[in-house]
Image (cartoon, rainbow, N blue to C red):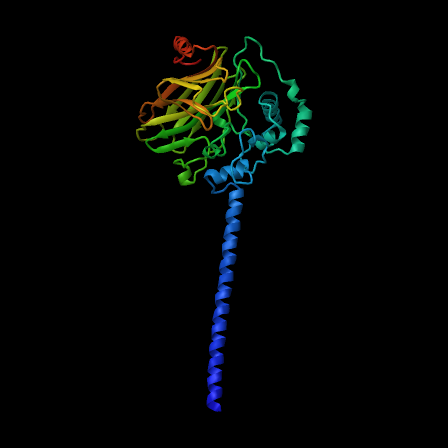
Length: 379
């Protein structure tokens, strides 16, 4: 009898040990699940905050997505709730008045787009519009013989229609708008420069897409603004952490917008393979916004986009162009220049051109532009 009891005790002990083991495994599993859930929540928060998120996922976080997880269709992004922190709050009342006039009177932004560009609440926007008496119907008329209208681009409305995942959080300090002479509501956005490549790698990028030599080092470049002058000229200059300096100047005239870009090698080593991307985006130019390259003509150094009726053109060119091309998804077109190799301390300047043409003989217009001497220095 005693021997039987002893055997039953051993069996009971074995069962208890098995149960204890199962409970331990379950407890460890619960702890592991909790840790994973916490990591997932943290990752989700980082994504919604725009931290450590790249590619299509980040573009969706910033500009919204439909129920299938696709980017919104063309024309829808301006009304979507902005989730990132890419806005620029006006620094003073004069700054606020300028940007409200820029956005509402000229770019014709909605309140949602103004909020996306400035970070202001709807209540603050309405109060500011009342204070400065800014109404869309008060749009000033451009005089017949006035220079082409050039304005700093305010951000808040993505300058592309598509391929948004290739231009996340576009920075406004490289972008300016040129309004068409035939329609005050239509304009193109020029990104000067969109990107700078060198023997060091991707040395500058005006939005988030792929790593630059700075993002690889977790170095964030400060936000800048165009210097605005009374005669309509815009200029800007940026020094990179390694002392490479680049800048741009934009001068509107009646005939065209004259552009200039310069690079200075402030490093102690020779710079080579200095390729520049300068992007012209016609999303907001009525009749030019088709996502195709069939409406474009490339004749080095000229790149031209034709209106849907075939009667109007937008033309750009840069000296020392190494690649005239277009991306139909954006849509955009380029006359991308290349700087010569620069020794330490050396500086070089390149000139560019943007104009509008009404007519059908684009080849003759290229020849006419060539005779203007646009490659000479702008004053």
